[in-house]
Every structure is written in C-alpha cells, then in structure tokens.
Amino acid sequence: MPISRKFKTADLPISRKSIVFLCANIMGKETVFGEGANRMLSLRLSRLCKIHARFSCWFVFFLVVLRTLSSNARMQEKTAAIVLHCLKYNDTSNIVNVYTETSGRCSYIIKVSRARKGNVRSSLFHPLALVELDAEGKNTAQLRRITEARLLHPLPSLPFDPVKSAIALFLGEFLYHALREEGTNRPLFAYLTHSIRWLDGCTGSSVANFHLVFLMRLSRFLGLYPNLDGYLAGDYFDLLNAQFCRRPPLHGNYLHPEEAVAICRLMRMNYYNMHLFSFNRQQRIRCLEVLNDFYRLHIPSFPQLRSLEVLQELFN
Image 1: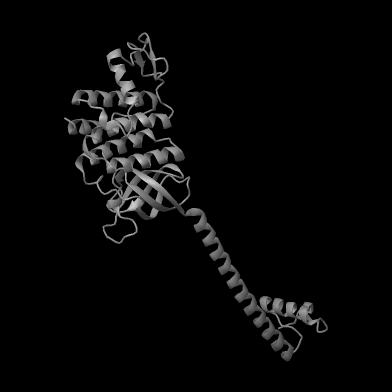
Image 2: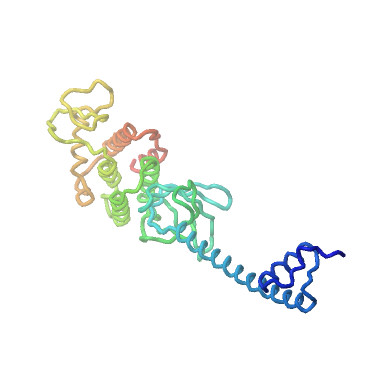
C-alpha cells in the first residue's frame, strides 16, 4: 500500500505525532514513525482514551444525580389538605378534590390501596377529612399524583356518626362547588379546619344548627357577608345585593320581612351559642334553602346540590 506524503513527518513533536497517528488509524493509512514508535503511541492513546472515558462517565453520572435531586426538590410538595370530593376514576385509581393550605383548590389522582400499611389508603379520603399529602408534579398540572397521605388531625366521631357524616357529605359537596376557583387563602383554610374539628366534637342538639352557622360565617371569607347596617323592623332583605331595604326590590330575589328577621337571627349565632337557638323542622329547612339560593346567586355555575335533600330528610 502506498504511503501518503501527509504522514511522512518523523520529526514532529510527540503530541503532534499522536494526532497524526490517530488520524492515520481512523483513515486506515500507515505512518513512518517506525514500529516501536507506533506501539508506544498506540499504548499512550489507549490509556488517554480510558482516562477520558472514565472521567466522562463520572461527570455524566454526577450531572444525572444532581438533576434528579434538583427536580425532586422542585416537584415534591407537602401540604395540609381538606378532602372535598372523591370520584372513582377506574378500577385502580380515584380522583380526589381537596382544598390545600398552600395551593388552594387542587385535584389529585391516587392509586386504590387496601393494604393497612400502604402509603396512600383510600379510607383516609372521606368528606371533610383533614390529611397531610406528599404530592409529585408541578403546581400547574391539572392532575398530580399523591405519593403519601396521612391524617393531619384525627376525627374520631365524624366518619361514624350518621348525623355528622350526613352534614359532612353536604358541606363537602357545597365546598366542592363554592371553592372551585378559590386560590390560596390561609385564613379560609384555618376557618375550615377549626369548623371541622368543632363539628367532630359537637354533642347534643347543637349539631342540628352547625351547617347553618358554618354557611353564614363562610360568606365573610368569600366576600359575600350580608350588610346589617340600618336594619329596621319590617325591612326586606335583598338577596342579590346582600342588604336590607325598606321596599321590595324590582327583581324577585328578596325575602319578605317575616323571613328577613331570620337573617339577623342567623348573624347572631356562632359555634359557642348555637345551642341556645331553637328552630323547628320547617324553619331549619327554609333557612337552608335561603342560604343555598343566596350562594347560587353570587357564585357562577353553582348547581342544585344533590345532598341537600338528604340533609333535609335527615332532620325530618
């Protein structure tokens, strides 16, 4: 085989000789460095390639580990949450809608696990359950996956008492629609948490008025609190403008004076004194209907609640 003139450079320095030798091997040509020089250059180049290969492997491994750690730190989130609604997605997964302390209203997907020691147990996600979640994925994702769930505050009586569980079912559906567009609101989350724990500890007849007080006080956090200034006996209550007026408004969404008095009565109630206010069945049902209509007027796309009839039948 003829030798190319480009590689007849025996007087080149060793670094340049290495380059010439490497290029010659790649191109399938021979050099004129001699057999011993060729063997030495081949050995040096092989060692150099091994060193570079090891360094490259460790460098790539370090970058992968660093990127994994940084992505996990970014994508993992731990937050307290209130369960609003749980929907079966398929045979192995459920979609859970919750209101979280850090991100507001969120939706998660969980794998159904019946094991007692599983990281995510479906029995934790009953209406108004207070849980702490570890979730993966970005906050902008519509459905994120829960990697671990545990109780934030135990509720010993709420899931097992039929009256309390019916109230929790109704309030969970109500909040599911009322907080659909609600973002981060820590005072609201604190109010909900306090109210749920109070419901769990309620005893006696005070439980029957809990949902009325809850819905009336909730309006303050949603910017819908009624204006009681200037109220006089015989006033009408304008549901659309949330205020009392001397004459009936032109629209039909108002309460007559005999029913408007109940609004003032509800405004005086709280969790500490609600056991002192007594309502008969018809009065309690009517108050609940008025509150439901009031929220439907002010919250877009607020539907007719299916659990409302269940709650009315409960107190029949």
